[in-house]
Amino acid sequence: MAEEKAFIDVRTIQPRERHPKIFAMANALAVGDSFVIINDHDPRPLHYQLQAEYPGQFSWNYLEAGPAVWRVELGRAQAA
Image (cartoon, rainbow, N blue to C red; front, side, top):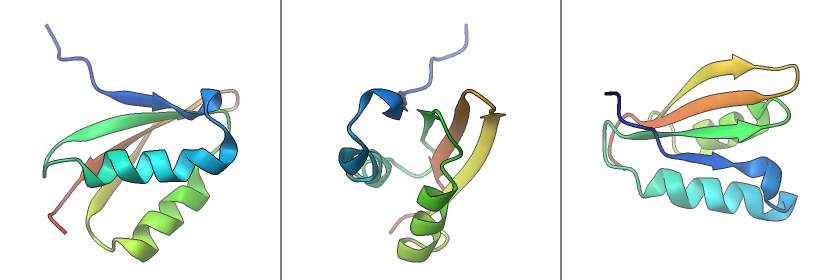
């Protein structure tokens, strides 16, 4: 049986709290681990922010790309 992946559904979180919670989860990941972000819009600005602040440290894989729900797997590619 496949292991269920951790996730964060940001649709239920106040907008100003979303990125800090996601960054906290991302920074807690061990290399090779990941979690899924669920959102009601494309989280592309978050991806740009991750690339700018943590270049090369995280992977980003779209699992579902709208139009109603976006699911992105964010993984730790390398240590800080």
